[in-house]
Image 1: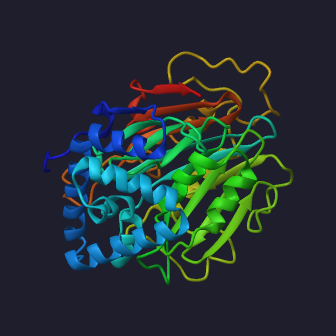
Image 2: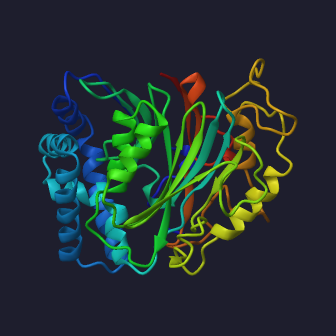
Length: 394
């Protein structure tokens, strides 16, 4: 097996911390300080796009179209992207090849499978977690992102791939976002980048309603599932290019088990909302999405009421407990996301001997607790032990 990547659990991610006067200065700081990583991410995606047999001209055209759509939807965000590009010494279209990588990949017939997400809605104490799975060769091309507040925007902490303004994270108002990629007929390039939709939620949304308004206002062209979590509620927004549908605990049209406003919401990498299942596609011929979802559904039937705090030590659950069998902390969710040999690969590790383009891995494990304004970020999968977990309280 080629060794041109670092095993995810061994990564020591760079931390980008920005405290700028405005969004332009913040973008310039990002471009200056992360220039090496941005160059590496651009090169990494160009290699990956070539592996997917995408023509350079098509990639450039798709990036340009997505940037134009971003300028229309959020001029402020487009200004910050431009500031990053200028300070990093790259063109806006080059930077957008990373920011709009999801939209660009719709030009390929298949893509890597990524991500399993578990959340639990309980008024005042909702929680969520996910394994971010992606190509193992990108294990060093992400960083911890502590993006400070600027006028009209909120501080948010999470992870981002180099060049992106944001991705998965939690803001100081207690609004968090998680992401799974999906595939649907009609997907194409040129829409508002899904990663900019995530960043706008983190930068601007102070409530669930504001987060959903931002998501629904964006003209997307690719497919994804955004899980939005606040202390009081979790809502999943399935995006099938131009269509968007919401799923909630207790009201999911395809989930007859749910009987109250509390409950689990799970997602992997295929559509679940009955309006969007027609036309839904597998990400690739060997997708494990359905097996992973079935595994998680089985595990949530026997969810523990207490688990080890995977950041080290044992969580104090006093005052936060739910009914017997409900998860009391994100540590319980991490237990659900931990799998081993012979189980569906919720914790994803490349197979020995896997070649470039065919080795997926859990690159980061994320825990979000909005009531505590707390996010945990650990390189690698929970099966690796999470000994490099970083905890932030906003």
